[in-house]
Length: 229
Image (tube, rainbow, N blue to C red):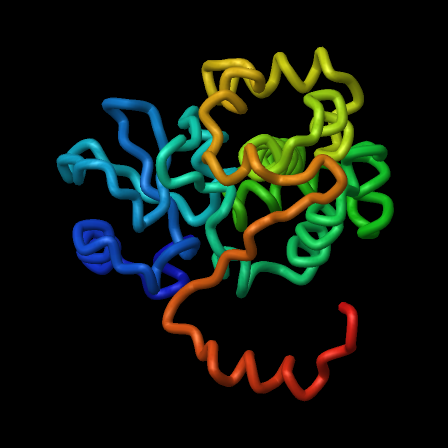
């Protein structure tokens, strides 16, 4: 899949070694010796080439048995373009999954909405995404939950429900299986500024991939600013 995007092993190796921010979110690095996957900008020590595997999406890395890095936080990586060029069915399915299609619905309902069979949908996901629809949905839920734990003071129960889990028990089990520690332990190590946030608001950081034209963005919003907002 990465080759289809023009990302050869040589390009991936050079981007990883240099921690090139332009590639942030375009691929994920998995290290077989630690069983952890990271962003291209991860500050951790550069792993030996022989221990490195590359994946186009976080869901694909998770499906291969790797867990997210707690230092570079893959859940905050800019949107991946790895799904560009996939079939129209997969693109539409991914948009529905991003909107929480499997939080309240089933794979059967998703396939029916797309006008294809469940087995055909699974084959398309295996070919284009490297992970099943359920795996993609679970990775999305876990990433959003991790971001809420790090960047808000929402109670654990509200984090579980807001991220699409049907119960706190299910959330705790899945989260612990992925991160090898319970949500409450993750929260204890969140950034200092997150502790100062008000319970009455939720503030999430918006990610971006440099280079980014901030002056243009500022001019755009300044012309459209609404007083009091």
